[in-house]
Image (cartoon, rainbow, N blue to C red; front, side, top):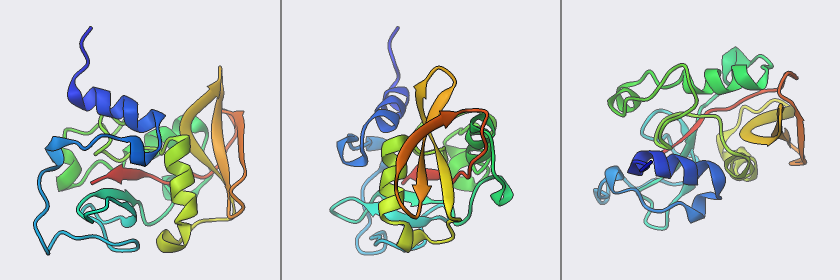
Length: 172
């Protein structure tokens, strides 16, 4: 079975740290100087920039508040709540799912363990985090997934039936 470019990028994005993700030609060129982003800026889909490429044209944005109206969620609920942000003009144009895990890294999704670590490192720019554990999309074992405690940054895994906070992110 041959994977599409978008599918392959989704696999890479959920498996490796941001810096290892290859440039996606679908992102397009940068329009200098109007499309230069900095940490803490409002991003293209209304989130807060928490990671930028060296040229400042692309990066990662986080939702401005916790997914699921800020309630604690099971892992499955967190995946669905993060994907529910895919209802804007930008993400709708990408044919993003609103009920399933992300199909492309350009869609809103529950961050992988590595993406969540980056978000934690830049949480002062994003703000609005509740002290407690946040789910990642990275599964640890059968029926377990990784989480990170904010503000401390400790990693551990937990049963997917437990309830923790979630924050959606996307690439731009």
